[in-house]
Image (cartoon, rainbow, N blue to C red; front, side):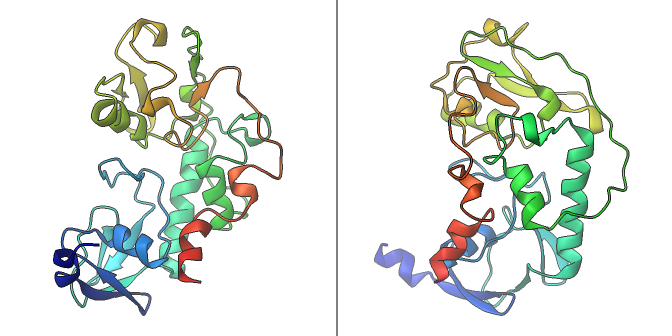
Length: 242
């Protein structure tokens, strides 16, 4: 860390825990460095912040804000782990399950899926209150190496930002509005685009669910060794405080 960055450091609190931040950092960035986990689905390291999923909502200065876009401020008191905020997060995650077809036992992403892992983290065990919409969109398996199942899309926008900002291609974008919004490609189908299996947008860590699928690699990781078999989502951040 440079001397300049140290000079601009300041502190604020998250649930009473003192956190050091630096000029230009968001609440989430500072929290991650300090080992304080704030739930998120649309935010991903290395991609520009979007603040659309609202799962990272915290209270700062009495206002509800997205931690991934909210600048950290000196002396700020942030609330993160409260019954009210966690209930709101459970409601949001529950609605995402209802808006798509997330059949975890037969999904290639099970055990590595951030949506599934977030449901466990938030103790989403109560009987559902919303009707399942059960979309029935065609699977795009036209590409030799990649398949796209938009029935599982949660509109996080991570593949869109990765394709635009990292790969420089703009393969993905949104179509539809409201509960019908989903990711689409800039061609007749996936094979009609310049998407490649080596693109950052296609990498397994970018799509948080099982929407973008790499062919011939499903279920390669045994149960017990999958990412979220090791601990709750966010455990690797929380271990920084130990």
